[in-house]
Amino acid sequence: MKISEILKQDKVTLSFEVFPPKKIDDYSKVEAAAKKIASLHPDFMSITYGAGGGTSQYTVDLARDLYQKYGTQVIAHLTCVSSTREHVLDMIQKCKDAGIENIMALRGDIPKDGLIAHDYQYASQLIQDIKAQGDFCIGGACYPEGHIECEHKKEDILHLKEKVDAGCDFLTTQMFFDNNIFYNFLYRIREAGIQVPVLAGIMPITNKKQLARSVQMSGTQVPERFKAIVDHFGDDPKAMEQAGIVYASEQIIDLIANGIRHIHVYSMNKPDVAARIQANLSEMIK
Ligand code: FAD
Image (cartoon, rainbow, N blue to C red; front, top):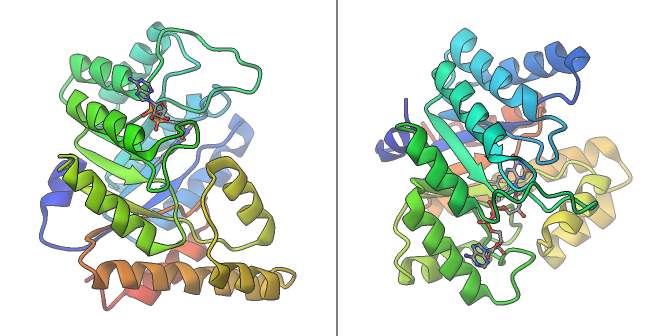
């Protein structure tokens, strides 16, 4: 089923993200974690893609197994900046062969060693290629605080509009910890004429190191309220995990209360975290 169809249903949707293993030896462990998340019956699951090629080969395998073995609706991520066009077209064909109807089209981060295949510069070019290869539902990324490489938010939104016009059926946001930033972003993109559904991307921070890593990669702002939580509970793993789950759940409750209908949780192969967030929302998302 296409995710665009799921998003049209008159309900709040909850989806979870997992990442594939780096090596085949870890495949069954990752599949077992993903299967547990699938057993929570999210509206769909997304499977990330290693831009540098590291985990890329197992993305479609994991998406296929979740879809074919467990009946979960899936979206396979695909990045382009480090790949040749030939490789990208091969991945799209693999999705088609596996019956996967949804692809998250991403540029990918520029690798530190600067090794770029040069066939693609932006996600919008990948979207054009996916569209030409078949009848896929295509998702794209967006950044409520602006993409880290783009100096001006206004310009970033203009590029986002180009990306949507290239054929994005929906957008998923980068993580954010302050809902007001998301509400403001939504207002600005709607004003710019971007009308596709936007999924709010929520990252439950369950340990101190994860916060530092996530913030460094994304440039996401950490509100004082959350900084205080991490300062206070960061050295107690169980307390920090609980606090992170509660913080993410509260963010989601506020989003739903303000009319946001699509929530995407960066569940990071942690079935327990996904289950506890879902349990906190059970009466609000049925
Ligand atoms: P683009 O939309 O191409 O934008 C990249 C930059 O280029 C932006 O600054 C934009 O303003 C600028 N730009 C776009 N078009 C133009 C133009 N015509 N002229 C000038 N500038 C332009 N990474 C992975 O490696 N694997 C994943 O699975 C993955 N999943 C993700 C899922 C989500 C929901 C999000 C938010 C990010 C994900 N990422 C993933 C990270 C993503 O690959 C990086 O953030 C990357 O740096 C940008 O990708 P993009 O698709 O947003 O790029």
